Length: 458
Image (cartoon, rainbow, N blue to C red; front, side, top):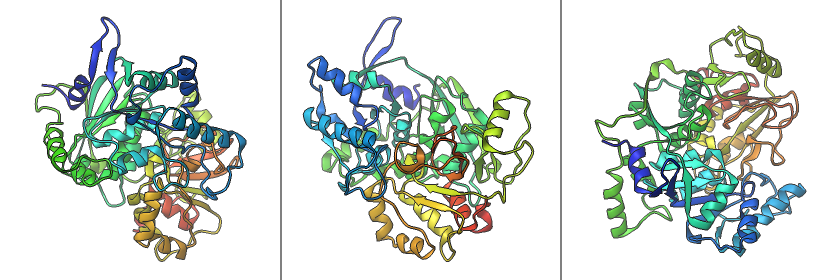
């Protein structure tokens, strides 16, 4: 009996190259401004048109400023990339959601919320965090620029089939523990290379009880364990989320799609190349202390001690010591957002902690919704008022401080508690020091000015 991954993969095989890769059909490709210019240039130089332009959606997100988006972009490189995407989309007849349009945001937030990412699909983008869309019950993975060009030209891609892994998380999450903490825990257990060569299916009671937003966060971080991607079998949570979305099937087409989607699960006797089982009771709110997402601890734990050169280098960069606890350490910046935690549920979580409290004076806080739709929902629910009363302001959508490709850069030596996905050296700005955390931990730090266990404030 096949795994869910096998079912979706096999249905999309166009042909199998003997002793070589699979030619895989792609249902949806997303393009942003950073990894697409060379692909468009390649198409142009070969005189090619996009094979199925209606399957490709473009939007700028990495380079977009998160304030004054109605004015020209100040950074010349960013301005050029954003303008090039708009021009390329126009020339090749592709749908383009430009800055300030109601449809714009981070591509991995907008895809699911518009119903462009659906169960059973194959989805690619020139961005490693494409794994996010696997939460819909899709096979979604990041690709390189030459592969972006390949999909533009043929709507297919050449890929070696990854191995399969199932990660089951049993039990019930404790108070204050979120999908982000689950992902950070898994990364610490597996390390950042523990899932290399695998496509991961997440299963178990914890995963079934996650909201769609939580599942998107979990799948988003699959890539940080080295996995090719991650996915979750679609169920009633998925169907309720998708129903009525702009691009979701309607009427009779919905009934037909739903009948198919209900078959999308691994068989009881499905065989995975690797199986791992974890227990929710072992997971507390988490933070990272090093320079890769696997270097993390429970928030009440001490940094481990290791006789390893890379470990020592990371601690030196972060200004931390082995054996010390991070609770109570002063911080400088807090960032809520990114394709990891820029959804409405993340803002609700953040607001639940700051309500009735005030922002700490020593902290700069960037609250960046993942899309205009999220920002609109924040206003509809009155969360903007709660946040404003506590001294916070909501910015405009974009990738923001997840990576140093726009104005939202953390200065050298400063500590940022960030809900984004990576804490590499200089990821949030040259010399910046990133501590990855959940929206609840970020909120607790934002009101206290130091690393704080959110359970004390809940």
